[in-house]
Amino acid sequence: MRVEYTLTPKQKATVRDTIISPYVFKIDQAEVTMEINKNKIDKLKISFHKIGYDLSPLGKQTKIILHKKELRYNAYKICSYISNRIYTESGTDAFDCNELIDNDTPEIYPENQSEQNDTSRFDIFRTQIFRFVSPIVNFVDFDGCYSEGYRYEKAYTAYAEGLRANSVITRYVQFYKAMEAILGDKMKDKDASDIAEKHNQKFNESRIAELRVLRNRCEHPHQAKGHISTSDIRDIKEVEQNLPDLAQVVRILFDHFKDQTEHKEITSEREN
Image (cartoon, one colour):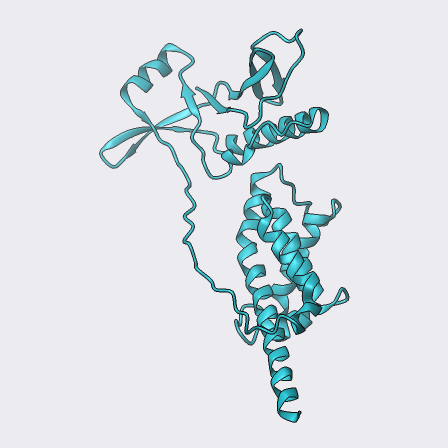
């Protein structure tokens, strides 16, 4: 079978007049096709050929199940390389490769008569992952000692920059910076766990250490457990899985020091 991922550019990148469409080249085991229309990239196709499959009973039906499950990872990495190179060389941010992270729905084509016969009789088993986001309405709390809280301005800045970031890895790093800004650059894992564990027992010193190691893997290329790269879906998923815990720890720290500030303010007013 031929498995093909197609992406349309969010911004049209201009190519030289000498490039003939379609422009086809190889990367690893993939065939990459650039479809060009009027000197603009119109489509990017990443294809994998000769992918084996099984005919497997699922309930009352028989489905075609492809052998290779990691093709989406390969396609994402190739897309990331092409997108980053185009952006570097032309300044055009052409492709949103994030389309491939949670949506694994390539086109699948038979490559011979036997495969044609099977696809005419049986459906191809597909998996598709959807993320549901529930809206949460929060209110601005002007009773939260905005004047005294200015000492944590760097923490609020880092956290807000994380919320605005499109990259989950950037978001993770910014959230961790917020924690450092609250507790100090020389903070120890225990400094965070002493506060956070009182609110949630899973945030012990060991868990904080895990969050720290993941931050180091995001920022520093040479790590014993491997560098976190935006070009690898598995790395992105690892960060996504840990991000809620880090965000919760930071929110606990914000609330803890806000409560302390409010308590000091009330005590001061009583003394005066």
